[in-house]
Amino acid sequence: MIKKIIVSACLLISFVSFAQQGASPYSFFGIGDVRFKGTLENRSMAGVSVEQDSIHLNIENPASYASLRQTTFTVGGTFGSAKLKTTDESAKSQRSTFDYLALGIPMGKFGAAFGLVPVTSVDYRILNDQTNVTDGTSSQLQGKGGVNKVFLGLGYKITPKWNIGVDAQYNFGKITTTSIELATGVQNGTRETNAAELSGVSFNVGTMYQTKIDKKLSLFTSLAYTFASTLNSNNTRAIAVDGDPDPYEVPGQDNKLKLPNKITIGAGIGQARKWLVGTTVAFQGNGELANYYNAGNNVRYEKYQKYAVGGYFIPNYASFTSYLKRITYRAGLKYEKLGLIVNNESINDVGMSLGAGIPIGGGTFSNVNVGLEFGKRGTTSAALVQENYFNFSLSFSFNDRWFVKSKFN
Image 1 (cartoon, one colour):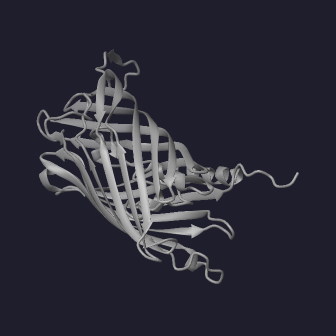
Image 2 (tube, one colour):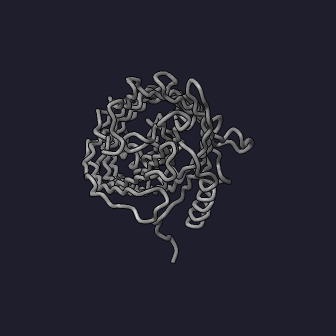
């Protein structure tokens, strides 16, 4: 399995390195776009993740770790494109991202998992050219970076039907923004660079319960809660004439950002290893995410909300005659209020997802997952930007038995 891990990681790094340009202007606000929406298996169902899965890792609810029956390694990435438009103009952007890398280990009634997840990303380039008018200016604004987390979690199976779990997360990252201002008739403009070093600890708890409704049907439920936490921001600022390699350092204004609490509730019905239909709702409190360089009178933060429905279907997971019947087919629909208000307009995200889990070889539960997402975020009202996006995602999930005692000497 180690060889499989190395090969898949190299393939994914090559995949996500293909394109690194463009992104979303909304990543300017707060700590950037929230990029992690679950593993690809769950994202392909719009984030629905209610089943106590024994072969797939569910990073969003640590209670799921206790249901693992084989050591599971998973890694995923996404290539995305978007058409950005206002009432007058339009443009295209592309980006590729590494989404997650995690390992889950079963330990009897316990299960553990750890990994690395990029949580948010900042990636934008904005040009506002008004030099064609008297005393006009031209401004360029660019941002890079984001917040990542490493996590360690533990789940416990209280009964065959009921799991609980907890994980600890160390959040870290750096966000750098650069702005260049040039006035009409002036050869060189001014350049201001702001850098924020971010760090903090957060905790997540969860529980999952499932039971039989009749001989075939089962009920699945899931509850996860993320505690409010603090993200320390150590800030620096440098100002220079554009093109000058020696900027003037200005004392930064350190800040403490407040990450809000979040509760996610899910439920579904289905037949194990055959089909499932479920729904997930999530609510998050108001955060205090503005830093000194991206605060504004036209920007406010509100409560985040998400509503999703999705599921999967497997024609015959044990089929020996048809490979297509062993593929897992997934789909989902979502609506999100992203918790951001700009120019008195709430920024929302509406989308749908499709995906497939493709078995690798015979006699194993390992698979390659592919997923497609289509959606619309934002609006052209109030001088804002609407993003019509398309994402193609790829992940590998390898399962194997580790730490098995030899029966023969």
